[in-house]
Length: 122
Image (cartoon, rainbow, N blue to C red; front, side):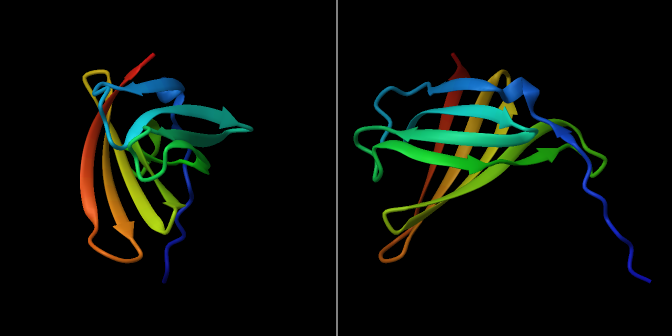
């Protein structure tokens, strides 16, 4: 007998706002904004001028992650972008008031690469 899983609400409210990279010389994401529109969490990244995609990366939906399957307060989230033939998988978690993003860049050609960046709430 298959068990049906119901999706529980995960609260992302502590992540809402504009976050800025702690490293001003980053070659990745310079800043991002987290919002909630009609209860749907959204993420909008802005690449640095030396990024593979400078400027506005556009808005995507956040997949929030809680500490347990029961839901509750978000401990992190993940998102995916695809820009300039580079798929970017972002895994985000919070630690000591910072958001830490592990970014896996997967170009359609050539080698993929990894970056970890730290952000503070502005």
